[in-house]
Length: 628
Ligand code: ATP
Ligand code: MG
Image (cartoon, rainbow, N blue to C red):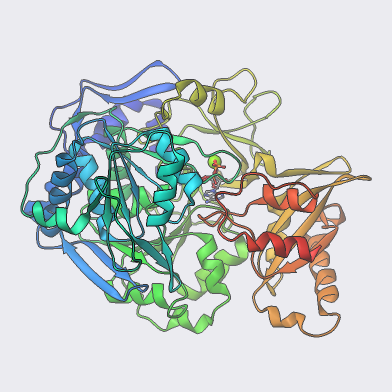
């Protein structure tokens, strides 16, 4: 483990030398004069004075060596289409879109809001913004009008690019009416809306405002738009956090630092090289999609697969069929997707030739040991749990096989990633904690290249939200609990607001969930603390079964509840035993697949669940209510 540790140490102790070297992976039109300006911490500027462009690094730079190689592979199991764009074709599409945005007056620093499903045109629009030095704000497709209106008012875009509709699991979701409604609700509607008409939903364009994507595309066919070189700290995009715990925050990202961080991560974390093929099943509306569907793979000269569909349609083998067909070398998914597959026929894992695949990376929520074990056994490939946040833009904790091959431990996202001076701190005293001591996971500033520069339009909130919660120290709080063991492996133990207090004992809901997940009948579960007159709080568990038919026999639910409690008793002790275990067919989750514990607690305590705009399926809350 010597290499990975010394690599990390070097990155923290000799920041400037370390990042100067990493910055070579990026094309700079004008070299930077200073690696780091940390004179105004917690604000940090990387690669000061350097001028570059994300689109140039993602496309133009590869034209000579990879012009005829695949850059973007689009597969839609929703509309039954597949299309491959070479680097040269991607260049042409992006230039045409850049020209059409420019014709609408979009220039450097202007915002463009993108509200699109997983279609190539969404990627073109993002890269076109980057080409122009404009700032994109991608809003996850299908978010309701209220979310959309808030985000429009926050970023005040000059132009919006949207589609008539998306499709999920074979069901069409109209986007255009949601956009129309949002534009009525918001205070700062833009003048122009470019609409991609996929022929999925019939709509009436608004005269003078709505423009047809295809018509503009034809008008600007063959256009070439010169790259706008921007200073490294120039914002590249704004992206809102998932809103699992509260009001989403507009994360502002720079340009140069982000390019360097992604380029270096493609090498060191993903162990990749130009010509590889990357399959990331996230959505372009999330940070994982920004970094590892769009920018990272292209900056690394790889082909990236853009998949519009769900992991179980036409069947639970669809992702593996993509790996086989396109010889994907690297795959990136989320535990929530794998838990969905756990409910499918395990033989599907063996049906396809996965020999091209080197590893499966997973992030977004805790990867519980049973799920990790299940997928590891099924694939026979390394499973690389990596921990990060919208705010950081790339992994904080991960195995880094490009630096050194290490043994991983299930349940652990391994080690701190170079550049992140990450610590476990005592939440009361702010002191650094040692091995096996649980505390708040924090990062000593400066945040590394690629991490958020500030909250869009609100520097003050950036400092007060992230850097003011640990007593006596101005450090970045992740608001997650964690620890590292005697071997230096880190473990994330849940969010700081997910700790419950049962008769004076502080329990992490994540630990109880892990334990319940180890019961063979359980696919996934959520544990919350509910007000209890006697004990302060009581743990209540909601579990989804791999096969709900086991509940069909009379008395089966009661017996299974007892069995689950017994598992927790044995693994964690009776104090952690949930007071109730209820079975539901789905958990309330955000649209990015994270469990909304806050909303479950409110329902259980008979309160109004509050802001539910990020929930995927409101019906799941009724199930919670009914199960009690
Ligand atoms: P909000 O901040 O708006 O409440 P969010 O935190 O869900 O939303 P994201 O930035 O998408 O928004 O998610 C980051 C969080 O996801 C982390 O802080 C952590 O709680 C969780 N997470 C991500 N990856 C992992 C992982 N590998 N293991 C454990 N937890 C993870
Ligand atoms: Mg968060």
